[in-house]
Length: 197
Image 1: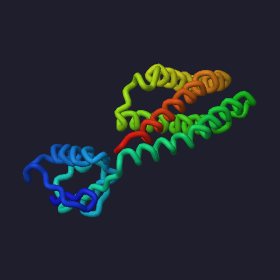
Image 2: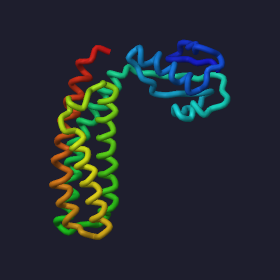
Image 3: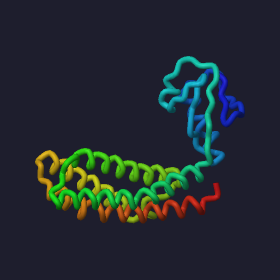
């Protein structure tokens, strides 16, 4: 199989190298340039890295990359702009419940949980890519533990129809921790902008 990275041919260490070893060599090449791959396409079919490793045939594989710093900055900027909407959503759910409006509450909470999960994922992946150590984000693990516990309490209250308790957990358990995550994301964005590569 011929390998191309951003249109340039890439030669593995051996023609008989395994797919997982090949991917590791490509990763090393890309990361060494301060990039990360955004898409993998084999014979015109886009796939993720696990599918690439399992693939048995193929004539040409194209890896498209992006500078890691720019990708992280874009993701973190998107997270910054999403936080006010997440806070508004949290408050709106709590207000609706306090006003005894709980039509579609399960859908609203599911959407909220998905949005919160996305935000946490962006923060954690950015921290990893920027190589920012936990001590630079004080009490991060405690914040994530509190969020997880609050979400568990909310889902339990949903199952038991304890509506007012959901509002309490949204206000007292979730909102303060979103504010702290917002601070972590600001720090990560600052670190990304200062990074050379």
